[in-house]
Image 1 (cartoon, rainbow, N blue to C red):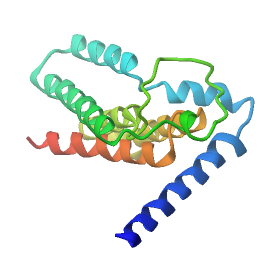
Image 2 (image 1 turned 180 degrees about the vertical axis):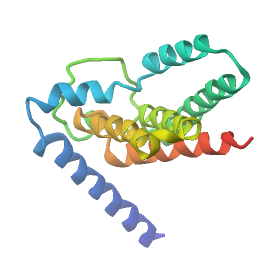
Image 3 (image 1 turned 135 degrees about the horizontal axis):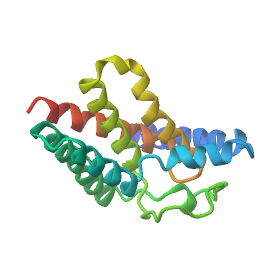
Length: 175
């Protein structure tokens, strides 16, 4: 039990150090707006509008399944956030916050719902449009880095969110 606690404690310390690097040491006035945009490419209103446009373009059964996948990712993220209740960096570390507002956020940080949605979209796009190749995975990476840079998530939050989104999308792709 003590060894497990020490391992978890070390992981949290590493997470905080990585956050400090991405949120403070890499900080730059020209990166602030870029990371703000990147961090908000997958917020719920943006995903909802994109999903509505996707459905309107061609409402067929596969699109309905894709929308159901995004809803499943949203639900899974909400359940995990509710049970884990990890506070955002702003509640723990006084991060540098170049975002100056933006979309409202909950107090829960783990996992990153935005990164989960972005990873699910990337998975669905990579399955449907194989010509996109690995380039489609830049989308969740940019969202995740942006979320850490603007001070809304720790690195492990976005890693877990990406894994959750891709995992849910992959498991539902073959149902």
